[in-house]
Length: 241
Ligand code: SAH
Image (cartoon, rainbow, N blue to C red):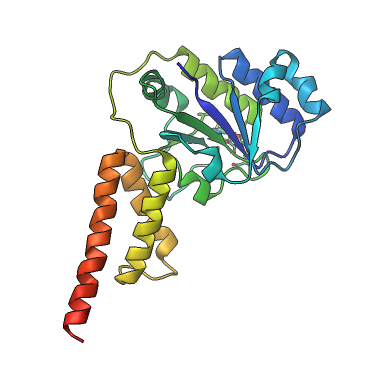
C-alpha cells in the first residue's frame, strides 16, 4: 500500500524540512513534495533528518500546488487557524485518519498538505482540500511547529484502522480543477455572480463538490451539463437575432 504524500507549501526553514522527513519515516511515509519552497534542502535539513536522509534525498520540488497534487484523489490540509469560510469544519486528525487509511488501502492517492511556518496556508490553498484538519490544542496557543504537525497527522494515520466506508474513487485533483474552471467561467457568463463576489461563491461551490467527491464519470457529466447549457444559450441567442 503506497502511503500518503506529504506536501509542504512554501516551507521557510531548511531545518524543518529535515524534521518533517524524520517524522514521516518514523510512521512509514516516504513521499515528500515541496511546493514553491522558500528554503532549500541543505546541511540543516540533513542534520535534523538523522536516519531519514533517504526521504530527504527523494523529495521532489514543484512550482505549484496543482503539480504537487497531480494524481491525488483525497486532499487533507492542516491549519492551525479555524476559518469562517469552512462551516462545519475543521475535523481532527483522529476523525479523518480511518477514512484516509481506507482510501489508501483501496489504492486511492492521499495528500496531506501543510503551510508556511509564518503564515500557514492561504484560503485558496485550503480550497483544494476535501478535509480541513486542525490538531486540537490549548486555545491560547494553537500553532504547532510544522514538523510536529506533520508528526501528529502521520502518527494518527499510522495507528488508524481503516474505516468501513468505501468511497468510490474520486476524479484526480487535476480533473476536479478543470471542472472548477469551467464552472467559474459559466457562473460569470450567465450572470450568476460578478467578478467581485466570484471567490466567495466559488468557495461555497468547492465545499459542495469536495464533499460529494465526484468520480471521473460524474465529473464528465457535470462538465457535459455546462457544455450543453452553453450550447443551448447560444442557440437561443441566435434564434432571437
Ligand atoms: N502562523 C501559522 C501557523 C503555521 S505553522 C498559521 O496561523 O496558520 C505551519 C503549518 O503547520 C501550518 O500551516 C499547518 O499546516 C501546520 N499546523 C500547525 N499547527 C497546527 C494545528 N494546530 N493544527 C493543524 N495544523 C497545524
